[in-house]
Image (tube, rainbow, N blue to C red; front, side, top):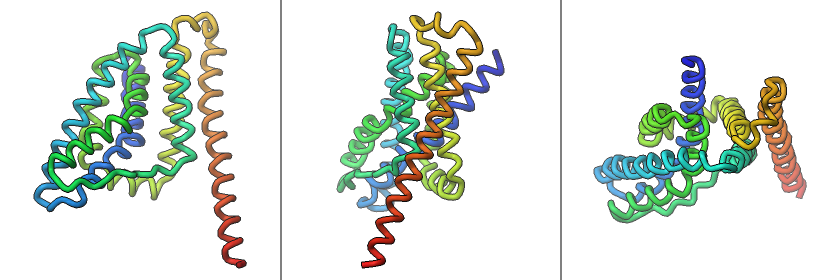
Length: 229
C-alpha cells in the first residue's frame, strides 16, 4: 500500500512539474505592465485564487470520475493531452492587464481555462485518494507561484523531462481506463492489464516522437528553401 501511495505521489509531483509550471508563466505575462511593487501582490493573490479554483475543480473531478464511463473518457482525454505535450510548443496569448485587480482576474480566468489538463491528471493519478489530491495541490502552490523560470530552464536544458512527463500522463491515462468499472472484465488477466498500460505509454511516446521529427524536418526544409532564394 505504501509503495502504491509513493508511486502515485511521485507521479503527481512530476505531473505538476510538467503541467502546472506552464500555468505559472501566465502570471508573469498578466502582471508585466504593472509597477514592481504591485507585481508581488498580483503573483500572490492571482496564485491563491487560481489554486482555490483548482482545488475545487480537482475535488469535483475526483467525484465525477466515479460516474460510470467517465474514467474511460478521462483516460482518453489524458492520452490526447500527453500526445499534445510532446508535439506542441505552448503559446501564451495572455493580455497584460493595466490594473492590480484586472491582472488578478486575468490570472484566475486563464488558469481555470488552462488548468483542465493538470486537474484531470492529478485526479486520475490520485485514484480517489483525497490525501494525495491535497498533497498534489500543495506541491503545485510553489510551482505556480515561483517555479516557472526554473522549470523552463530545466526543460530547455533537459528536454527528457517532457518525455518522462508525457509517459507518466500516458500511464495515468491507462490506469484510469483499466480502472473503469464496466471494463473490469477485460483486464482481469494481469498480463493483459499491464500489457495494455505498456502499449498506451509506448504508443504515446512513439507517436509523439515521430510527429515531432516530422515537424522538425518540415521546419528544416522551409529554412533550406528560404536560404536558397
